[in-house]
Length: 558
Ligand SMILES: Cc1cc2nc3c(=O)[nH]c(=O)nc-3n(C[C@H](O)[C@H](O)[C@H](O)COP(=O)(O)OP(=O)(O)OC[C@H]3O[C@@H](n4cnc5c(N)ncnc54)[C@H](O)[C@@H]3O)c2cc1C
Image (cartoon, rainbow, N blue to C red; front, side, top):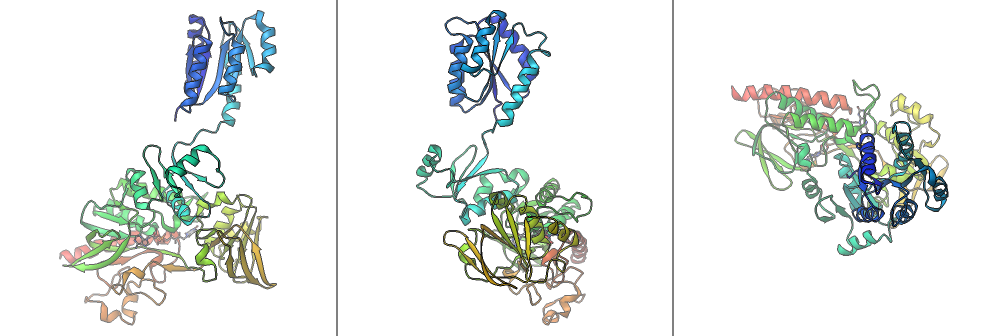
């Protein structure tokens, strides 16, 4: 972004050169210093800067100049850059004119010539004024912008995608920006179709698919692409949460050609956590986004190929290798495969949920929505750690956070450190023994219907965030991999204990610790039957899985 400008005006060439030199010495790191040898030249420069959207922070002008004096020039400058700070350089004889100009030309300060030494006279005055100017300066955002309605599921999906990939963006709520001529023109040019995404350089995209957006914004720079470079890998990993990322880092660092397939953004559920406080080595906790970014960068450094956003659709076997069909039809083969697709929240089966999903009703913390909830009432459904973290995050923005808990309270389901914090937070209210009966609204969520110890009640609210039970992402596996009655993948000794285990398992040896019912296919993290749903255990299993992959590869080579 262009640095703000400081304009110096003096008709005497030598004086101008000297003032410019002194200004550059002190301010060149944060300002662009521009000199003008006449008031009309200075005003033209200002008009051009205005046209180019470049801000002017300060104008320093000599008073005595032919044709137009400093005060007159500063008065005109006020129409072009009303927020710029104004300083007059005067001779002793002009003091009175300078004092009068403080009101008429909104002069902020007048300085006597000569200004030597600048450290004592010039710099302290200008620094003070510039500090004020910078404090109020709201630099124009030059990155990716999303234009859309707050209650549009498509807008939410784009915001969520960028947030989860740690891509900075600005969201413009078109309702609030109505009447802005630039916005009106943009919307008209796109025939009123929303949401729109504008990139710093390049075209305006109408409700782009995430894969297209990923290509356009250059996620390849951080190692992400939806296209595989090869058709064959030693190790393929489905799911880029903590388990998959850990396996990718260990696998690639130990010399396996490794591909990781992730349908949304690397980080998984952990990436949506506002603050993970129980992960070893981070005494003050770290945000899920930060953990995801670090893990993604580490995998990139070890040359893991990360296909994201990209989905695995089916798996199979061919000639002793495992195969994966991707969402866009690409077919990959690998020696060993790790399934680490994790879980996502179960849908809340109440009237209104389907209609209002994405329009005020969300699953998980969706951190991108938190800031939109300023001064509003939000409801969190659930009583586990993830719900508790979300409550602690939302209470910083929302006026009131209401937690609806089905059980007696939080202690049974939530870590004590979170329970204590929630109880100490005045704008979080916990409603135990309370169930959701319905979600109400037309264009957006307006109310939630609940039933609690006091009977049925309808509560007005602006957002509902749901954290109830987990469902594994395993439906797409078909019959290929044995699962328990809740859909979680069975591994190790449990495979042969499964009613169909002995019939399905083809080898003489029993399955290895994290091996599934298909030899050479392993599972790690939350997707495994009986797993501990924690970041550390997922990371642990991801790394153990790589040891088992090595063992399997030795076995098939022998
Ligand atoms: C809000 C929240 C807060 C949490 N806080 C904590 C905490 O403080 N401490 C803690 O220890 N744990 C916490 N957890 C739990 C922890 O995040 C999980 O246990 C952990 O992320 C599980 O890791 P995983 O790799 O097994 O699966 P996930 O993190 O679920 O990742 C699985 C990934 O697989 C992808 N995927 C699924 N299907 C496919 C497919 N077909 N193709 C391609 N990709 C696919 C998903 O998009 C996802 O990114 C929290 C969870 C949540 C939701």
